Amino acid sequence: MEITRDTLIGDIVANCPEAMPAFQAIGMHCMGCAMASGETVEEACAVHGIDPDEFIEGLVDYLENL
Image (cartoon, rainbow, N blue to C red; front, side, top):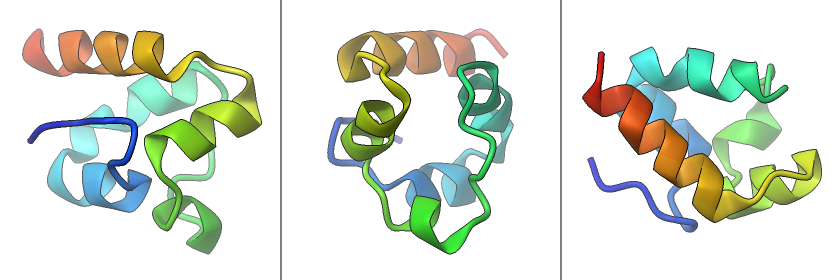
């Protein structure tokens, strides 16, 4: 799955549930809530004060090394 700034959190969790610990590690603990499922990676990162490009790079690295 390609993950970009515009990818919905809900799509990531649905397609790659193993990604959840990477989100939780930076304080995104509400992946199951209605708001998170409709948020993009960029929107979620903005709310949590995280650089979206760095997060995506780390997330992709995390998933590739499972």
